[in-house]
Image 1: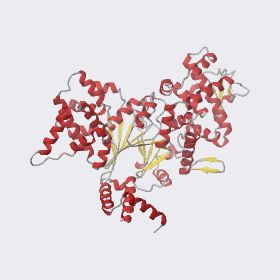
Image 2: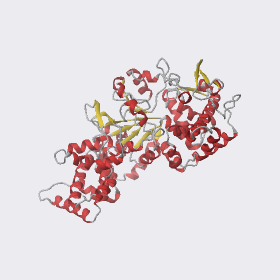
Image 3: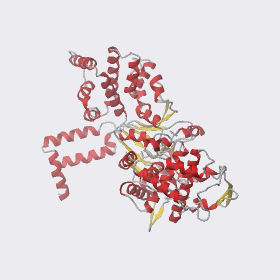
Image 4: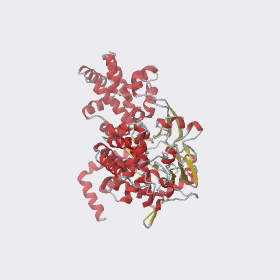
Length: 617
C-alpha cells in the first residue's frame, strides 16, 4: 500500500474508529447517491437591480407559486393562494401588514401553519433528513423536524401530538417566528444551489444590496463579469478602474451607491468640475471632468501595452479642437463638444496637478471603503472566471476566437495564452490584484478585461468616447469578437467544451453578457441546444431592447427550463396587492431518466468517499 494512502486511511480511521461506524456511513452515502439531484438556478447580468433580484430569489423564480398552485388548487382560491405566496416571500413584512388589518386570529394561524408544513414536506422530500435538519433555524430545528416527519397511526397518537405542538406554538405567541422559520426553510429547499453568471455591478442603483443578499445565501458561486472586475480593480486602487467606475455611476445616475453605499465622496470631483466647466450643469460638469480623466488614463495605459493592439483607442490626440472634429479610422466626425480645458494639446494624456490630486483622493476612498473591501473579498472567495459544474461550463463573456473560429488570446511576455489557459491566467491576475497587490502591468490588465475585444469578459471594444461625444451612431458601434458569430454553431460549442474537459453529450455552455432581444425574435437556446444565453435584460435600460426583464435558467432532476420574467413593479406592490412577478416557462430539454445525485459532481466525490471507506474496512 502506498505510504500516503496508508496515512490517509489512518486519519480516516480516527473519524470512523469501528467497522460499524464505517458501514453505517457507507450505507448512508449509498442512499444519498440515489436521491434526485438538487435544483440549480442560473441568473446573470443583475446590474444593480436589487428589488427585482430580491423578489426572484424570494419567489424562487416562480417555483414557489407553481408548487402552491399544484398542492392547494382545490383547498384555496386563487386570491388565497396569492396571499399565501406573499407570506412565504416576505413573511415578516406580510405579518406586520396583516396585524394592522387585525386578521391574525387563532384559526388563521392554524390554517397557515398547517399549509406551510404541508409545503415544506413536499419540498423536503428529495433531501436526506440530515440535510433538511441542517437547513432549519437552530432554535426551531427539533420542533420542525418533528412536524415534518409526523406519521398517521392506528390510534391517532401522532396527530394528537402534532395538534398539541401547534396549539402550544400559538398559545406561547411564537407563531410569527415559526412562520418566518418555515417560509425561509421552504425557499432554501426549493433552490439547492445558485449560479450568478456575472455583472452584479453598474447601471442599476443597488449592487451593494445585492452583494449583502448573496453573502447570506446558503449555497452559490459567481462567475465574474467585466463590470464586476472593473469594480474589483477600483477597490484595489487601480486608477483607470476608479475613473471608469465613477464615470459609469454618474452616467447612470447612481451616485448613491458610491456615496451612501460605500462611503466614497464625490465632493472634490464636483468642486473641481465646477471650476473647469462653469457653464455646465453641476452633475454634467462632473461627468465631463471624470470622463476626460478616464480617457487620459486609458491613453497612457494603451501606450504602455502595445500587445493590447488598441492604439486606435487613443482618441484625444486625434481631436481637431479648432474644427470640433475627431478622426477615427481615417474618417472625420463632428463632435458635440470639444472644449476640454484640462487637456494639453501638445501632451493630451498628461494629468494636471489638480487631476492628480483628485485621482489620489478617489483611489484612497475606494481602497479605504470597508464595506466595498468586504464585498470584493466575497467576490474572490465565491467567484472565478469560469466554472465547470455538473458537466456544464459557465462563463460570463466569451472564449475569444479568431476569424477562422480558432482560439485567440493575448501575448504576455514570451507566452501566448488561449482558451482555458487564457482564462486561468486571467483568474490568477484578478486574485493577485485584489488579494495581495500586483505590479503596474497586472493592474492594467484589470482594465483590459473590462474593455477589450479580445478580453474573455468583454469580447467587444467599448466605445465610451464615441457614445459620449459623437452623434453618428455608426461610429459608436462596438466591434465584437468573432466568438459572437461562431457561438451559434454546435461544433464550435463542442470544441470549447472539450477545451475545458467536458465531453458529455449532456454538457452545455451557460453564457451571460449579451442581452437576448426576444422582441426581435432572438432565442436564448442556440447551437442545437449546446449554448444557453441567460442575459434577458434585468437592467431597466434593456427592457425595451429585450422585451422581457431577465431570465432564470432552472436545472432540476427532470429537465432544463428557462423562466422569462416580466418587469417587476416593486416589493411594496407585492405586499399591498399580492402582485407577483409574471414569468413564462420554456422547457427545452427533458431528461430520459431522472438525474440522481450519483450523476453530479457531488456524487463523484461521494463515490470516492465510499471507495475509501470500503478500503478502510
